[in-house]
Length: 197
Image (spheres, rainbow, N blue to C red):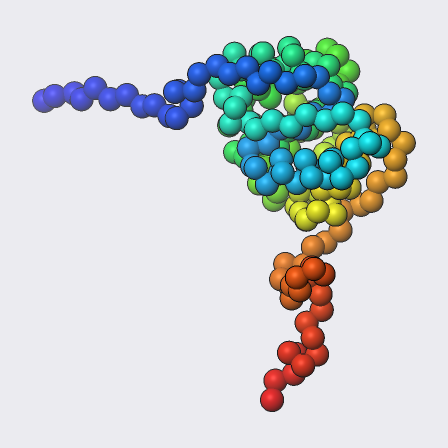
């Protein structure tokens, strides 16, 4: 009888430390998905002169613990608000969640750790966050609905959390399906297309 020696490895084991070389900002947002980051960037850029400073980063660049530590020391610890949306929940980015939670509590930073899967609830992310549950649910609702209007409102809500006095719209439902007309967006289906002979 022979016993086979086996080892396991993941892609994260191959990650090397990275310094993102970002400068501090009032609001910081991290996500694994490019669509989250692109939506937040577009919303901030459209109204940048009225909004507090913002930095965005991809979580895939912060897989190594040393990368997390460098980023927290240079960016996160100076922020007023930190939003992190994590695909896979707490277990996917355990070290980052724990370090951010510790830093946020020590420095009075408003920290929102949200699940990347909009329908899931991750109690460990809620426990690590420093914002009340109602605020976390409200922030997640913008991602659940999606769309440019909701990303704009989300950026405004983050600005308000950072101390701005701007008005904030509640999340609006985005149609799951619709008739799209170039230059106008989603429009009602023309009557002649609703009537079948």
